[in-house]
Image (cartoon, rainbow, N blue to C red; front, top):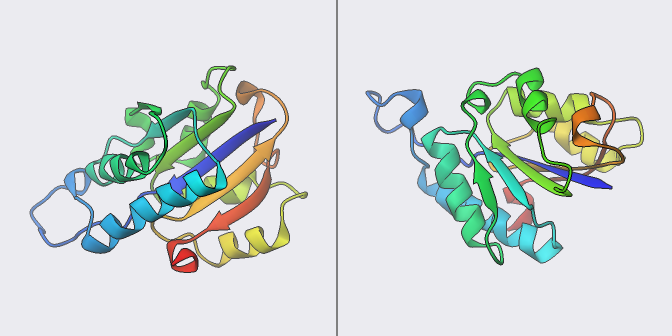
Length: 171
């Protein structure tokens, strides 16, 4: 059984209009939500062995705050492809995951990440989680999927969405 955790970056700041989108940092709300999600991952024992993180500043900052709340250390890669990625782009990165990895976290952006989550969710997904995902996948939201098989064989509709966690639902 493989576990895939899709995490949208936390709320970013628009305070500096001269700043390029890629360089935008987290807003105060984002700096609160990211560690909350990290603590929730730790409390549920959903500990990634590897994280694929968009190289954008807000994603890196989200990852640093999430990772600080996890026990131990987690290897992280920052593929350029994850910034402004389509669902197909993200899926291609997921398929490159080493077979020894049982739990993978992907931290990226909408609309690609939300679209990927909706397309990965198979018919056996939890109804409540699917409803939450369809309703809204806000900043710092996390979708958890389980599936049997190999990373390189993962296709749309193959995974079971088990949870959709949003910061506002956690505290």
